Amino acid sequence: MKIASFNINGIKARINALPEWLDEAQPDVALLQEIKSVDEAFPREIFEDRGYIVETHGQKSFNGVAILSKLPLEDVRRGLPGDDSDEQARWIEATVVGETEALRICGLYLPNGNPVELDDAGKPVEGGKYAYKLAWMDRLQARAEELMSDEMPFLMAGDYNIIAQPEDAARPEIWEGDAACRPESLAAYRTLVNLGLTDATLARDPRPGQYTFWDYQAGAWNKNNGIRIDHFLLSPACADMLVDTGIDKDIRAREKPSDHVPIWVELKV
Picture (cartoon, helix red, strand yellow):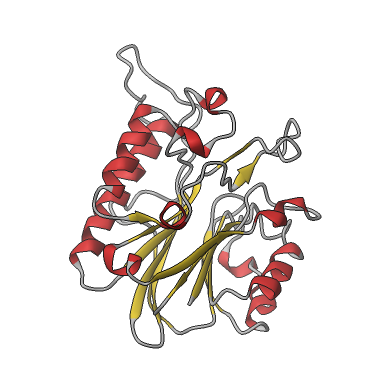
């Protein structure tokens, strides 16, 4: 089973590039982030005509996540548990049924968190974007612990907006102070991984320089000034199924690209 994750940065902008990539890469399941569309406006037919089941959790103009699956989906849930007042569409999960086993798949778009607003004591300002990021990560931790307690293998994939280590940035010094690599963000991410989750990309190929995002500004793509902020985290049972991983870097050089590129895993399920 091939499962991909792709922050498309707007379905309208990627209306041609996304189907083209799907036809080439042929993932069984694709987790999308930043669809930037309400559910009713998402162009389902384009993907249904390609054999995909389409499940969305959309939001007008911002955020939004989706699952495209050629395999049956069960128990689709929208929204990260833990805060009923949170209206941002950043989480979708479902059970996908493989040939021999079922797998819980979770697609996420973790908050960016910038600008980082701190009070005089150096604590995140309540109600600010950075405080929201950390609170969202607390909820993510709680959900991961719940999933870990279940017997079903699971994965959590998407745009984490986390630069987990200096090797994940071409120029780590320019990201100092950014919400993606502040100590609080990294501590929360390490706590999550320390549940026993496996970073699929690093498990297969730990070399530095495996970037998934290049900003549109300052010629970042041509200079290869990238960062790795898109991740697959696999539960222990899911990690045992891992066959291969990849980053479809060449997509970034095509016409009207997203600033992110697809990442994928192949699992024996």
